[in-house]
Structures are given as structure tokens and as C-alpha cells.
Length: 107
Image (cartoon, rainbow, N blue to C red; front, side, top):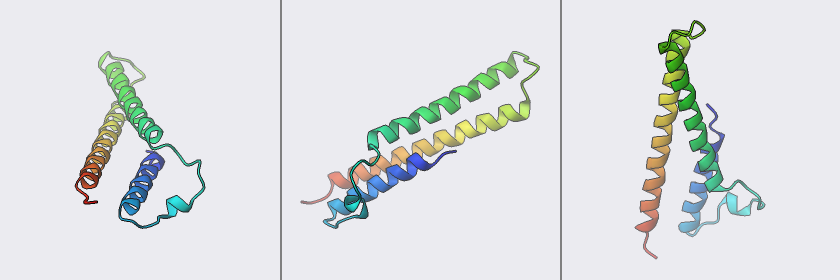
């Protein structure tokens, strides 16, 4: 699984947290033109969706009796889809937690 998008999201969150704390982060000193947070998030969601659709397609082919469908590959694909979905849920939980932390900050 490609974790580049998640790493970029975490770096954006860290930069936001340091900025909110009044500290200058490395991300602020970096040149502009970095990845857009919303685009990274959308790409990650699309990737998880694609993984789930591929797994569902393989499972449907296996259930239909397709001779090319291998049970081991189907099970591995379903587990990959499950893990990627659980990872996305955890990232969402971290984002919600960070959002609540920002809301509860005193100015």
C-alpha cells in the first residue's frame, strides 16, 4: 500500500499544530508548491475505494465460478481492502481529533 499520501497528510497536520502553537515549522520555511491537503485526502480515499472495488470484483468472479479466480488471491485482496479501509478510518479519527484540539485551543 502506498503511504505517501498519508505521510503528506501527517506532515500538514504537524505543520498546522506547530503553527497553532506559535512555533515556526519546517513546512513553512519550505518553498510553496507543496501538495494540496484536500487533493491528498481525495487521492487516498479514491485509492481505498479502488482497492475495495477490485476485491469485490474478484470475490464476485470467484462466487460466479470463474475458473481463473483463485481463492487465495481473492482472500488476500479482501484482506488488503479491509486493512486499507481500517487505515483510512484511523486517519479520519486522527483528523477529527486534531480538529477538536484546534477548536479547543485558547487564543
